[in-house]
View (cartoon, one colour):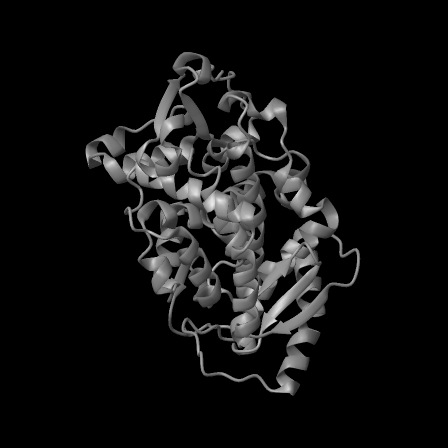
Length: 397
């Protein structure tokens, strides 16, 4: 939506992993189940649902963890069919080094401008309180929640020296799938690709397309992580029935021990969860119906174009095409006294969140999404008070 054009990339920029210590996943009687305890048929390796912040990794443990990168990426490659094209650099990092990285990213002037604009739009729509600090939230979330990440800019897998290996291995499986994606499809370039032909239904805006691509990236990696957690049981993600986004969203909320995430405004929680929850459901459905090659390399070669295609995989699998939604020239309509400060598009996921946050339950049940293109304008004379002077125009199909 209009806020996603800035907010979702910012959260993606700061938050590099799913949750710091995923709870165990088991399959019983053909159904999926999540648990915080060890069932009778639990795998040999246990993945605790709590984080031990007092853990101090020894040099021997660090060396063993670094060596496990090769084993885990080989597992990922076998499951996804994405070949390993080279060595993945790996490094143990500390909490202080992570804080330094977050601080450096805060100093990026472009990021600061995006934070300012995002906050103004979120406040105007009533999604966050007027005293909410988006930048502080993003940095605190990064430092508190991160349990390992792959950085495509330097082609390096970073592991944490304050977490035991059994808490990092599932996250490593997730993040090393990003390394495979990067080696095979140039991850950063692929995510940012602006395909004009795909953006017609959103009035030429790329935010829906990029949100869909992030859901592919994180959905695949989350699928690989679940496969890694199930493998000691001799089970596979392919054995799971149709997945429900609501079930996995609830699972993330329960298994996360991060107060900043749990207490975040509704819209931010939804934006943070979307690529993982709906991305996982999308990848799993494509995997079930079209096979492994299409679910992994195939969706990179023919990526989904909108959150609608992520949320309703059948529209992707059947090659649904929506008519273009032209955006009117608001500058011409409003005149020179207004300045455009932000623009974006509202897709199916945004409509769902608007209904969830502001509509009654009866209206939520009757909800059918429609496309909306939006632009925010403000008077030139009041540029300094952006949060209080946004003007929004909507065009509906």
